[in-house]
Length: 228
Image 1: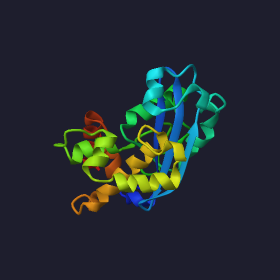
Image 2: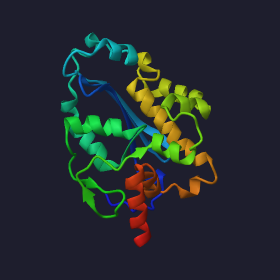
Image 3: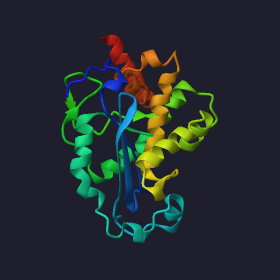
């Protein structure tokens, strides 16, 4: 897929994901909400067998017990799925460094995939990501918190998340700290940005990706854009 960075963000699938788990036990659940044309067009949620026992503190956070995931396939068996997601469009998340870290812990890099910041080029990298936490911290810097739940509450988006949760999430996983529910919440934050007349015209795919970068990387990317 060849995609120019100035392409409107709605024209390419953005695969917004979330993982439950940590580097010790590994991923115990993943959720992916694919956004295209500003809508969630596909969603998937799976439990994953961890590398070891899930600590009690983690169980209390995400509500997944060792018994829940005892017979699940480990994350490593989903290699083709995640590689294809990256080939089809950029990945997204809320605080994407967490998801990228867990992906890299399992697979250091994907297959060759489009570099959505440089038209016609390919990279063997999971990023660059569309990161809703970074986007909101750039666009609304005076907010007291950029946590997923706080942002959903601040912008009065909970009802929208709940409706989509009922449509896509398993009945027992329709709350925050459930992977697909959190991925849906991040997707809702992404499309909410288009409701602002001063933001919507700027929302090319490349702009979203650059604004999602960390400070130093973002500065370098902007400087490269200015050179051309």
